[in-house]
Image (cartoon, rainbow, N blue to C red; front, side, top):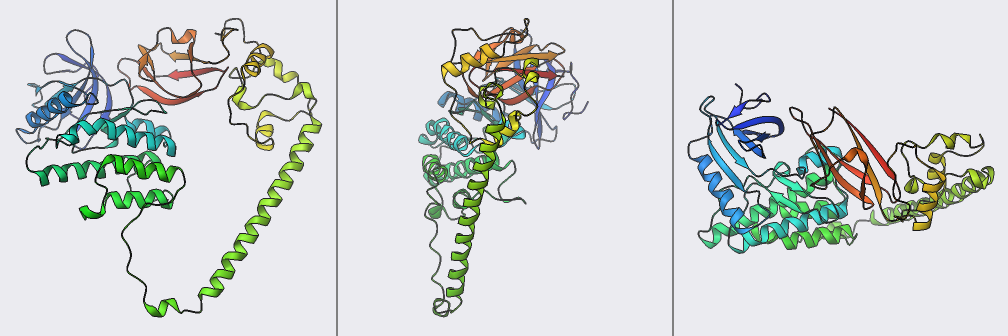
Length: 431
């Protein structure tokens, strides 16, 4: 029996029945499992070569962290499986996806990355105040709630230290660096420094400072790190870094500086001309498209589409009417949510089929999520909360939500879902 690929139905430790794999690390694999009373848990099975005593140390670390901060996923059990000789640990199962699962779908927006950093600071502050650190922050052990808060739960704590002052300071500094690496991964979908385009200059400067080898040059707290991320998201430029040595005197008198200035000015003028041309041409195209389309046939922008796919009635529009995609690209974007009257009108003009779930006529502020599972799901979660009868439709606030569907003996389906005001959003999940 391989400890990295346990088959569904395998019993570990005499009482934990494996359902599906939900994550993998260098020395362990994590499974969704059920225990003797049929409740679900997270079962982490380690490589048998793990040194003796490490499991007990990790268990104590988790218990100590859970006693200090509610953000820690509580450890429930630990032992060695008699059949395979593999150590295992059991902890509370998080209904939220890990950052690794979430970023696999799409990277986080800068505003959500700032919220993630703030949430990490809140979660670890009670530990850091007592000189205790997580010690092993990584995308696989940070479980993220829905934006805009992006509240986190944490697992896999390393052995905490509350010894001498310099030891705790070093451990907290390691958490600050770990948080920076987690945020970098959230933005780029890869570890910081790996091949590929970097984030913009302000964000990259923050990451480099957080990972500086000299403690005096790095950030001293997660709050300070989050403050810098917030400034970068506002476009305020990079934080103060190490002051570089002054250039040689000869470099200050080079005559090449003047031509470079003229070149930069020429680029700016050229970009301004291009921008003007784009505005003029785009405006002409917009007016032409709007003149060609009879007023009654113009479809609403994508933000107020109430049914997916659009109802068949829309096919009756004249051939000269532009498509929704043409309007979306030609008409200036309206990112604001539609008004209550606009949503009500859109619902009335595009009635769904008789069997389709509908938003109540008096409710102009929500969207609806409808989930079809093939075969039927065992459970469905929206933003970490279980929802019953998801196929009948679930009202939800407009915005981006985290959706998860579970089916025994299959990997969980986790994805980010955007629901607009007045929209009936249908998801088809195939296991």
